[in-house]
Image (cartoon, rainbow, N blue to C red; front, side):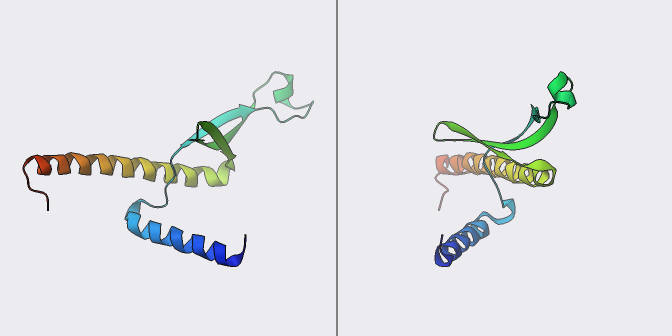
Length: 109
């Protein structure tokens, strides 16, 4: 990807963030914790013991679920982004209810 394309993407992202206000950044999806085995034969997880818990970001796109490994550092950040998305959805629902009421009263601009 060339620098011009990267700059275009950054400018587009900045424009979108300004429009979204305080509920940015955001992501649609879920932070999930999965238990996995590490592959080491001598590890407790390979011998029937407790598996290693790891955080992932999960999102469904075009009918397929995508997972991104987060690790400990990015888990809290991804959770905040998901919470922002949920807050935005709730805000839109409330605005819709208000606008429907105004529309019923013929009070919209």
